Amino acid sequence: MAQTQTVRQNSMPRKFVEVSNLNVAVPQAGLTLIASMQIEGCERAAFEIIVAGQALDAFEVHAKCSSTGNDIVLANAALDFTSPSKSIFDTSGDLTSQAVGTGWVIVNTHCFYEVSLYASSGNVAGSTVSVHASAN
Image (cartoon, rainbow, N blue to C red; front, side):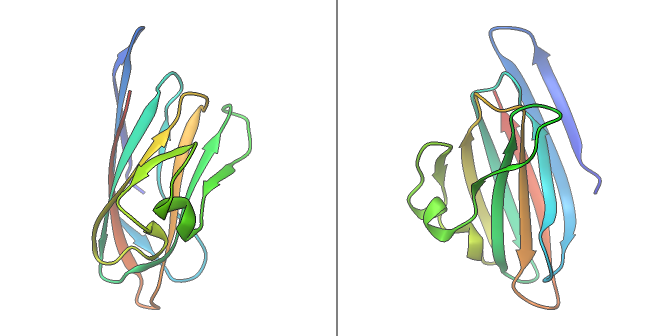
C-alpha cells in the first residue's frame, strides 16, 4: 500500500488532512485495508472510493479513539450506508456492494483519532480500489 497523507495546517482552529491511496489490490477473501487517515481534531472526513475490475461485496468503516485503541466498526451493513445516522453523515449509496465506478462516504470524526476503510471483492478475480480523502 503506497498511501500518502498530507497535513496542510496543524493549528487551531482548523486542521486539514488529505490522503490518497491508489490501485489497492482487493481480493475476494477477507477484508483489505484500503485507506487509513489520522483525523484527530477534525470534524468530518470525506472519502471517494473508485472501484475497478469487479464490484465489491463488503465495505467497512472503522475508527480508533486513540493511537493505541482498538478498531471500532462504525458501518458494515447495507443499511448503515443507505440510511446513515450518527457517525456516518452521508453516502452515495450502499457501499457494501459498490459496483465498478465511484462511490463516497462522509464520516463524522470529531471524537476519533483515526478512520480506516476496508473492502473485499465480490469476484475471485479481485478488484482494484483507489481512495482519495480529505478531513477538516
